[in-house]
Image (cartoon, rainbow, N blue to C red; front, side, top):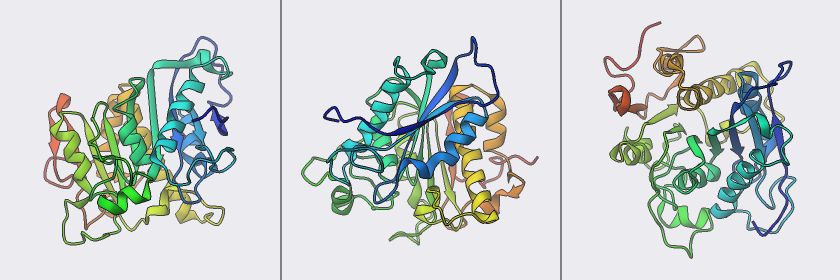
Length: 301
């Protein structure tokens, strides 16, 4: 945005000869309100450790990126994804020869998740996305996002003076959401608003609502070093990577991981919310599970 140079960190497989290899690549952008790219190295390291190239990036005026863009501005966060994709495919990236241009994805948290929900309909380079709390059906958010959409959602993302608009589902999208009830504690479908938007468009989508996780859980703070914190991030990384493996690698085993009754050894019922429904829609595979825990949706290992 406005020619500002952005700060980011590039990740690639370690101890592996990349000669002749082209790998899928993923851009990761942070939450607003004090988040920065370093808080998402957990996801980038996991992807790189499993054969991806990844880049985490701070939008203008965030973290170590200079600039004077408003702290809460959806366009600024969307621009960071575009800029990072440009970098990955340019000669400025020392690994650009190893990036597969046909297998690009992106993940983002909070405001970045909403910006990414919009940007996937604009940037034809993207092939799959993961929105960490949460996928959104409009620029101003919706009832499944933490801001609940409406006036509050517009204000939160610097969209107050911009008209709302529906996003255009174009690529397979996973939403991961907190089970913080917000204002919709009595509605088990609350977190699936954008999921249903994707489903109506006939585009593959998955909504996972994580049990007992606050909105901040996808950001790794310096104070979070316990075994429980580590396991939480491992599970989030496991699910995020499975979605990218399914769409950027066409790995059939990824579907098994996404529909397993166990998540890294833990019963799925202890990982996913008991308050809000998780769901999976993959029309190309004949899967339409509005409730992941309904009979025939999850597989026993």
